Image 1: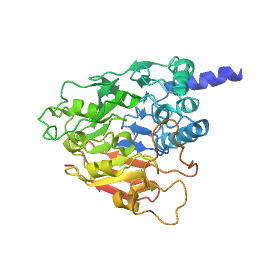
Image 2: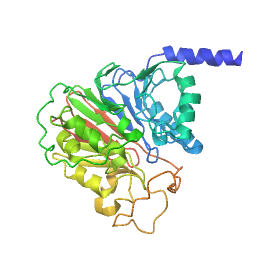
Image 3: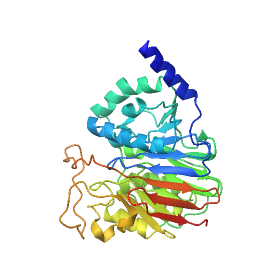
Image 4: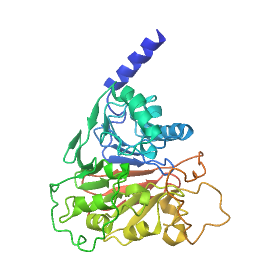
Length: 369
């Protein structure tokens, strides 16, 4: 009887209106702290929601990150997640999925398809856990050129499974002057290059969220012509690591504002910070964490930082510290399991938008272009 009641309750939630708060007039975007992973929630006035990524995979971190996502979900007044996009199969992007699905109905699961970078934890998830999740709802394999049907948004998939958009989006398609100075990087055989990448429009307001798309794929997307156009908000790729965020992408998109979902020892390295800071028209960069990898030399003023460091410091370092060695044998950063704060963006169809730092209540409004 108890199981029947639970199933009936879940079914009723799935049939309920997508959001409790139906008087929303803005596109609300929550960039959620999942300690160097990724999670971004989009809720337009229709209430139909899109969540991109679910945080880290270690058991304690997965629960922590799912709970943090649920705090944003509740703030948005949602009773379900309509679309969940997993950008790629790295543990900091799909980790909290099962824990989240146990707390709220998810109606559609979207990903790029098979994992190209075999790892036991990923392959176990894809064969043993994931089918049980999407089997109760719907699974979609994203392809460049696809349009995600979300009431009130124009949501375009511009890269997926290592392929990039070949046609220009409406209003884009001009020659990209930064292509001539581009230096190719090493080919990336990892899951990062497979990222499901999106350009989202709400009236005149435009957002780029490209997951962890890497340097050479950015060139494929943006050259010889800029197929994306300009954006107002750039959710910085790959936590602000320099194997992504090429000038050919960032400078051509000319974002007014960037939001960096980094960890204190993950992302925000000086080369990437320099590219963002020198991008034409950039006004501000907001950081989920103070980055020890950038130090005070390349970081932002404290009012633009949502969370501090994972270990108490006698003094904030001026010079960047060395990035930890890459690879599976790299030591894990200290866990930060205390209070966490998000950034909330509220955008209007005229292109104006406001960013709020939950930690300190600092708010800044950006007028329409």
